Structure formats: C-alpha cells, structure tokens
Length: 366
Ligand code: AMP
Ligand code: MG
Image 1 (cartoon, rainbow, N blue to C red):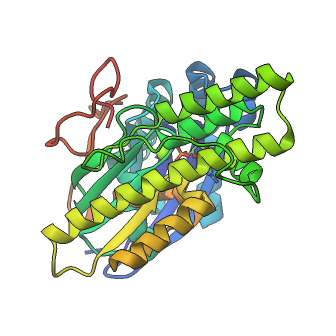
Image 2: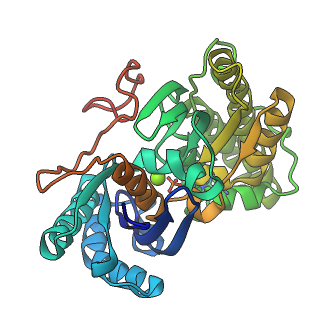
C-alpha cells in the first residue's frame, strides 16, 4: 500500500473551470495542495444567466491551463498523480463533456486511472475534506441549481429527506437581483442590499411551511417579490434605494426562515434514525456563503443539539478539490472507471427516493 494517494480533480459542470491536487496519507487529514478556479461571470454578464454554449467553449479552452496551473502550484507533474477524478454529471452537458474528454485524454496519454465523480457527491463530501466529519451526517445542499437535505451514509450512499419542488434558492436570489436591477451573481448582491434594511417592510410568504415534511418551494416567493416590485414601479415610476434594500431583506428573511424550519424537521428525522450518533448538520453550495442564512442555521443547530459544520466559502461554491476528495474516497474503495465513462446531464445521488416533482422535462435532475 502506498504512503500517499495523490489525486488530480477536474470540475466543469456549470460556470467554473477548476482543477485541484489533493494528497491524502492513510488515516490522516487531506492536504489541498492546489485549487485553481477560473470563473466565467464576465462571459455571461450581458445575458442575465449562464449561456450553456459559451460555458462549454470556455471550459474547453481553459481546462488544460487549469490542470497545468494546479500541478505547478502543487509542485508536481502527472507522474506523481495516482488517479484523475472528473465531474461526470449532473450539469450542463457541454461543460461536463469538456471535463470528461480532458480527463480521458490525460488518463489514456499518461496511463493514469480515471474516476468519474458525481458533482453533488463532491459538495456532499466536502465537510469530510475540510472538517474531517465522520459518517453518518446530515447535509443541506443549497446552491444555484440544487436544494436538498441528504443523510450522507458513505461516499456513495445518500438518502434524500426532502428538497425543492421548483426553483433552487440560488436561482431565486439571482432572479431577485435581476428584478431589482442588482448585479449577478445575485446572492451576494441581494445580501449586500439587504444589509441594515427592514426585513418586515414587505410581507413575503414562507412556502410549504404549513405542510409536513422537508420539501421546499421558492418560485412563489419570487412571484411575490415581482408583484411587490411591479406595484412600487407603477406607483412611483421606479424603486428607491430604501425599497430595494427592504425588498432584498424581506426576500432573504423568507428564504432563511424556510431553510431554518425545514432543517429543524430534517434534524429530527436524522436523530430518530441515529439516536446514539453525535449529530451534525453540514452545509454546502454557494447559498451557504450567505451570513444571515448561516446565522439562522447555527441557531437552529444549537437549539436541536447538532454541530454546525460550514466549510470555508471557497469550498462551498464549485471547486475541484471536492471532486479530487471524492476521488480519494473512491480510490481507497477500489472504485475506478475506464474510457467508457460517460457524461450525464442528470444524475440523482439518491436512487431510492421518488424523483422530486418538477425536476425537469427530461427526468430526475437530483
Ligand atoms: P453554486 O451553484 O454552488 O456554484 O453557487 C452559486 C449560487 O450561490 C448562485 O446562485 C449565487 O447567487 C448563490 N450565492 C452565492 N453567494 C451567495 C450569498 N452570499 N447569498 C445568497 N446566495 C449566494
Ligand atoms: Mg455546484
């Protein structure tokens, strides 16, 4: 058995091109030797959202630079790499394909084993990379494309307790920013606008809180915000800075309340199944960078006796260190892929639970 496992990770499923080298000694914490992320925010800025074809081209252009940079920052070459782990889905298919083709080329050319990784598993296992969290734990994945509660039992065993039946919160933050004339990505812009503003000036709904279970909905909230905005614009021919702040604060508070209350229910389900485990709720995904949401989740964790684990923001958003880490776990278990690895636009983590409603025309997204 080797002393170290060294994995090169690649990520290109959305609008971040990333490569990373993670090294892990047996039974020791992992060392993130490098983590390179090229974001594409400017490329998509004029379009009000991510344009899949532009994203795919940018990934194809940037991936090899990213790999070079990640190896050089780690002061290693391909000779030192034990396996290449690559996001094989779910995501925008052009970007996922760019990453999978790049990884296959490197794997065949340098004769290095290949490991296909589920992007959501990357987010889901990040608390093990950054905080050495032991299985099982509860995870809230809350990002631009996803929102779900998962019991993480092992590196490839996940049980979904509930999730959004329509929009993801990040998507709702982005749409809110567009409606209020704020910049993209919308989450940080809405958070900045909300700072110090009265969250109760406008009344927004807390969807699905009146129903049992852990499912969530955010599209009605977005419609309520649009209606409030339209009424103000009609009356005064525009929005004042105070109104933008209050609308942002009201929206953020509503998202926060829904996530907090649904987290409480998910924690109770987790505790019922694992009464003797020291319980932890971990968060992952870009929305987990929001300070008000973090504070709300921390408070409910304290009330329910759970540890709250929030990885550093740069490992909450898309990155390749999380993909390399899943590579470490799969390498240890002897789970490899070969040149038949395919790119998957949809790839649910939990294959046993029923698909989420409204999960997309082409089937189950997550
Ligand atoms: P991800 O999908 O994990 O790459 O995260 C990107 C999403 O997270 C986007 O929809 C962002 O608007 C959202 N996001 C990033 N930072 C924040 C924040 N501070 N508050 C709320 N949402 C955020
Ligand atoms: Mg992501």
